[in-house]
Amino acid sequence: MKTSAKFIVLHPSIHKQSNGGSVIASSHRSWFLFFVLFFIFAFVFTFFTTREAATTAGTAAAPANSGLPKPIFDALIHYASTNSTTTNGRMSSAELKAIAAVLRRCAAPCNVLVFGLTHETLLWNTLNHNGRTVFVDESSYLVSILEEKHPGIEAYDVQFTTKASELYDLMEHYKFQVKNECRPVQNLLFSDCKLAVNDLPNHMYDVPWDVILIDGPRGYSPSAPGRTAAIFTAGVLARSKRGGAEKTHVFVHEFERELETVCSFEFLCRENLVDSIDLLGHFVVGKMEATEIQFCPNSGSSSSSPE
Image (cartoon, rainbow, N blue to C red; front, side, top):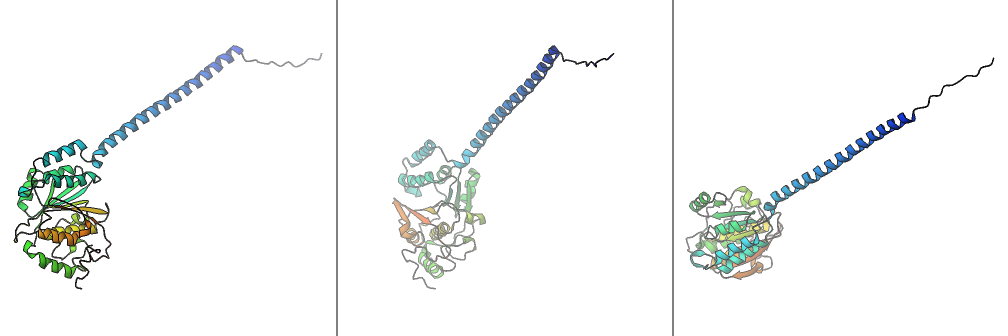
């Protein structure tokens, strides 16, 4: 008898297949939902963390790049200039406002060098908020008192070796040395020019000064130091600076006096005088190449200097 082979075919249960597929699909959906939620959480966390850090950094960085708010700046000028007179060396309202206008336009941080400790010292230091303001004076006593009362102010005392009565002798020395020790572009720290102020801290000569105010040393008597050295030094610093703005604003107070006028026109140049307000001369002096040997090439004031 011929028999045929029978094969047993096992069919998977439709019910079981359906349940298994549902479990697998459900598992896949759970994992997918988990990853979606994870990435959403990560994105939200990163977004707010980064935003908070950027806000904090921006807030911390803002004071370093901004000066006083305009209302405060204006209020200080208003009260400083109210009833201001030129008696006892004090500046007039017009003079204060002229200097303040330049400080306001100066991009913070602004580097300001002031010769002389005066009634306006605290004003200049405050108006140049977040900038660097350095004061230089002939009196070590006044400098120490200032530092004691206002520890945050940077000030140095300098021994000026010149006298107001020596003006024309000093001018002859300068003209003889204009191509050597008294040249307009140099590092004053190593200068032997009699008119150079070279005993400041070394780093002071590397600062690109934006504004230089000359309101000292004393110059009201022949035996006083006079401002020949201060004006000469300002002229060299403005022409020799590296970095910063191309030009330096130089203010000379009591500009009407003979010494101040002669030295300003010689070292800051008549053509650089942009304004004269009461007793204040305002010069804008540009940088020069190291090869230049005249302070005022256009006037030819030094062209006849001896070799």
